[in-house]
Image (cartoon, rainbow, N blue to C red; front, side):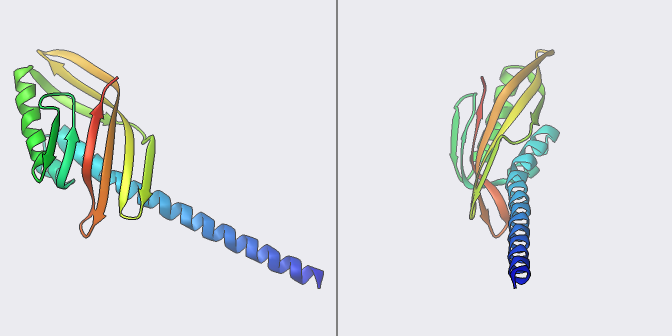
Length: 159
């Protein structure tokens, strides 16, 4: 009788561990899915593919970044940001902009909402001279809808 009880207990423990491990994998996948639009936006930015970058944005969006006017909001915020980035880059003679995302520091997913913090580097040329912004942070809020995860807000912070 004791061996049967021990066997049942062992079976329950193994079953519980299997459920926990499976849930952990689903969570990791969900986190990767939530980070994907942030990577899509940055990949589009790096390649100069504005349409691909903008496809990662929800409508409306709220953005805070380090160049004027510093904040964008509304249905066209991502496109407005892109236009203002381009104008600012031209004014300041900035070319060859590339953002490198590091391993996410934090990814929280709660139902159809997510919060993502990713250390980042921004390299560019200003008047032909290489400039590197190391240790920046991209923070994004996202929402999952019928079309998948989309960025609802993001901020760029430098040290």
